[in-house]
Image (cartoon, rainbow, N blue to C red):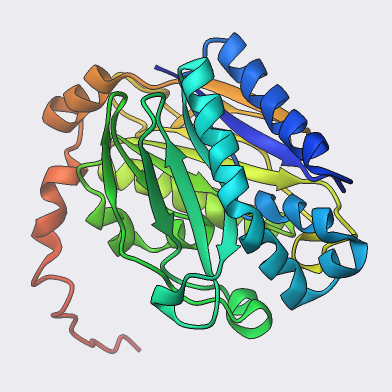
Length: 294
């Protein structure tokens, strides 16, 4: 299948028509280039905050609530675009105030299929900024979506840096990693995490990023990143593990291919069998002996 992953710049939209027109244009471009699976970044839904006015968007709490209030409209838009273009879309994640998780927001991505189905994935582990400034909380559990394109999991940004979360998605063919990183160091951490999950799981991981400034919203005011598609550096895949990668901080789609047959083959008959051998760590990881060498 062909995958499109976004390096996505944020715009200070004045009305719904501007926002929906932009999303529609991005989806149409990717679908027109043959993409079947589209990934937007973490927190790119903060564009919706400006629809409530610049003062609201500039306020940490009011901006998040404004986005949460419009997420139903955004979901309807993405569902329509997925059906119209015959594609799967992982929409930009958003702060969502869900009463099931208390008074604070979760960071939620939503996956739309051409047939009208939708799945939601909440971030599992909050960054320091999310804990201290946004006061966001973990949401529902990790999910593995069984789709017409294969089994798809989602690790939102920081979640990709934790191997046990990746291991819980061990049956995934594709793991989506929508990200939002302010600096090159943050981007690099998530990229390394995404590549490590592809190595360990012998699967394909897909990373998207916000790019450029958005001074009107303090949560996403500075952004560094690019799109990337990664696989295990093994049989049937690029020896570097990089299947496709965009230019740093250059907006646009990055396209790459994922072959379910190649994933199945490398898991069964790769030069190494990391996914199958994972369990051999047990016992060895808890019996470390201290041996002074002086």
